[in-house]
Image 1 (tube, helix red, strand yellow):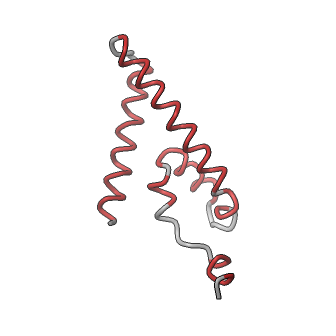
Image 2: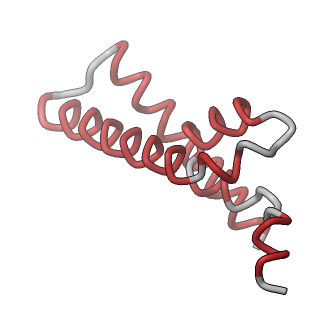
Length: 92
């Protein structure tokens, strides 16, 4: 599974690179709009993930770094975070 999560991270970084290249030098007409729209939707989704995971990130050693990585990588970084101990204790 670690290979798949790593592949997801690599593909997400590749996509963000494509969006940045498209901002600097736009592609032909229908593709530049579609790439920008997909980038905006992905950014909105990752912002929602950061908001939903806000409480679980507050107890982490470097919560702002984790928020930034979730903003860039999304669920591929959030899944690699260890489970919080509060949630484990409530199930006992």
